[in-house]
Length: 131
Image 1 (cartoon, helix red, strand yellow):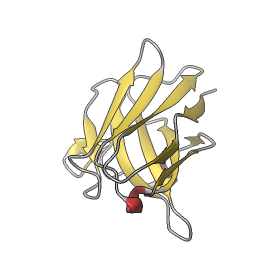
Image 2: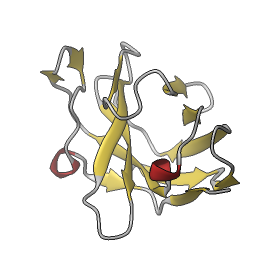
Image 3: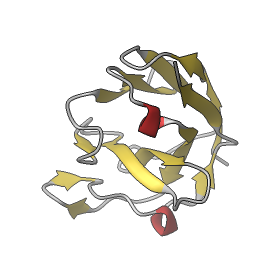
Image 4: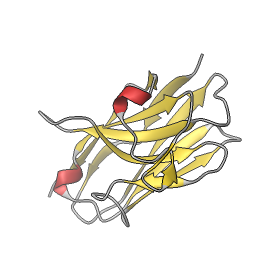
């Protein structure tokens, strides 16, 4: 059974950078999707970045494109999200998620991730961007 544990969240000033990690345990299949979602207070959960485990292709929401980078180290079974040029509106709880299948949507494998498609979630890590 796949389990996910996020780490690396914290507080940073606007314009700063932060890298969060998701450690994967169990045996996730190669042809599947992983994603980072975020949820702010009184907001819906938003998929910000996703990747296909085998192809390593990526997808980004418009709100983070050019600033965030999702990557994976399959040997270490870790998913990363590098966040640069952070803005106060990036403040949220960030969740790692795993879907036991893949799709092609929005011009990418695992593109336009929707929470309903993901079956395994981490507990989340808080990111706060404030001066």
